[in-house]
Every structure is written in structure tokens, then in C-alpha cells.
Length: 173
Image (tube, rainbow, N blue to C red; front, side, top):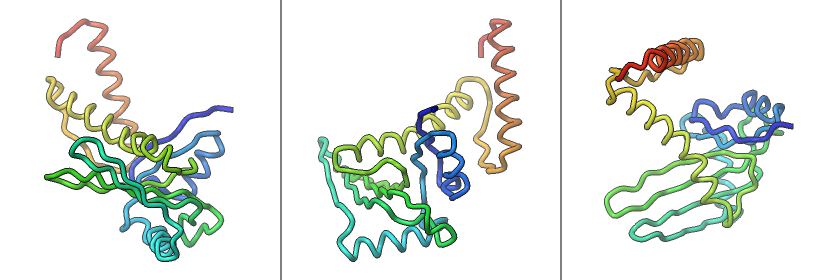
């Protein structure tokens, strides 16, 4: 069985996608947003009111990492049998407090919530660093915010072919 973890943005956290990830033996950490997953966030609010969420905070210098999480909530109304574990995170800094939320199939505890956060943030970090390199290192590439898979696949192949040619001829950016 293959193992690994998928980390994706908010548009990917749907039931068929999760079932496909599980079918291949992978774990997942998927970004979710209230506008895209209203039922999930309602279930989390009900769990919070019932005292079923765990609130946890870690200080690192001037930054506070605040978490709220609950295990075993339904992803959506259409798939009440598909239970996920929900993590909400605030990175509280003196000047800014970004907020993130994910669903995962890893059971969340105070011992592993920081690791899950790092996994959830890794996709964003890799994506931003990749596009910054393509944009600022002579490739003249701008971020394309399309969610259409075929377009992204074609773009990926074009970039891969271009990079391969670039390396083969020993050109500099």
C-alpha cells in the first residue's frame, strides 16, 4: 500500500476527492473555507457549543499559535458518513493574525496539531516559492488562478518541457 499525504487548497476538500485519496492509501490535509463548506463549519460550531472542541495554544517568541480542533465531524450534508477531523488555526502576531482551517484524516491531538499545521501550510509555501521563482528569476511568469484542471495540466507540461530544454542547452535564465 502506498502511503503519503495530500495537501491541497480549499477547492479540493470534497467527498469524491477524499474517497479517491483514501482509495490509493494516502492521507490528506485539505484547506477548507466557510464559504465553500458551510455545513462543515456549522457542525464545528455545534461541536464547540457542546464543548467537544479542543482549544490549544503554543507561544513561540512574540507569536501565539492558537488552535481549535474537533475529530469526527461530517464533511457535508450529502455525505454524512464521511467523517473528517477539523483544525482551525490563528497565527497571532503583534501586527497581523492570519487564520486557516483544514480537514484531515489524521486524528488531531495537542501533540500533533503543530505538525498538521505545518503540513497544511506546506502547500501554500511551495506554491508561492515556485511562482515567485518563475516570476522573479527571468522566466516572466505570472500566477494563473484558474481552477480548470486541463489548463493547469497543459501549463505544467509546458513549463516542464521548457525547463528540460533550458537545462539541456545549459541556458541561464
